[in-house]
Image 1: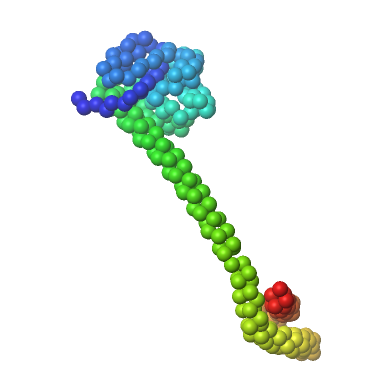
Image 2 (image 1 turned 180 degrees about the vertical axis):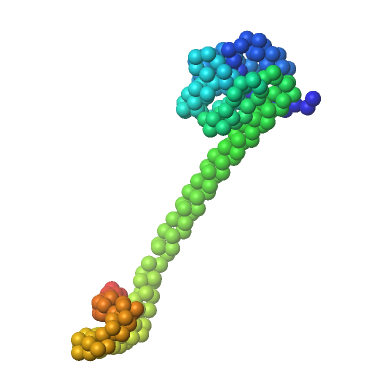
Amino acid sequence: MSELVFEKTTLLIVDDNQNNLKVLCDAIADFGWEILVATDGESAIEQAEYAQPDLILLDVMMPGMDGFETCEKLKSNPITDKIPIIFMTALSDSFDKVKGFSIGAVDYITKPFYTEEVIARINVHLKIISLTKQLEQQKIYLEQHCTTRTSELTETFQHLNQSQIQIAPIHKSATLRKLVTSNAHEVNNPANLLTGNLSNLADYTSKVINHLQIYRRVYPENKAEIDINAQQIDLDALIRKIPEIIFLISEEIEQINNITNQLKNS
């Protein structure tokens, strides 16, 4: 039979029946795994915390603390919550598979044991454990590598930026001042034109709004049609928003003028 070899693999087998423990231990004795045994839930938890086995085979039907409760305690303990658990149950037992998986078990095997099946299931989960550990190590390596490279790139960028600042700050400032001065009129002229047009637009808009308000009051016979259209275009909101928009645009233009003047005088 082909077999997978895992270094330093430890299995914890938990069963209150000594005969079951002997049968299972004999079945897997030749695979080189270190085998620990426990006969109740309390001692199983103690050994799991101390020995940190790679895999636990846990009997469901045990006196006192049964397999379900033992599993829940192991999964609620941060020291043992990552250890995979395989439930063992007799064919005659009413084993709740859904409950078993929902509380954290990864698999289950039935008694009487079929050696080939037991070995196959153990090997599968040990392989999963091994691959998971490899992935975690790769993840840690990549995170550390990315952090190192990011730090190196950040440091290089900072040095480059500092060098650029030190090369010709005076030349850069003079060039900027010259550029702003030579192109100031290209900014100021449109800004001034926009300011004048906005002033006229504000005046015209105010007159149109006043006219619309008079029209709504003077012609009541068309009130229904007017109200329907006013509702469709949300006229009240437009009357409120148009002056607000004009005001915001005028503020933006004033900011442009202020920035241009500051650059010219710097």
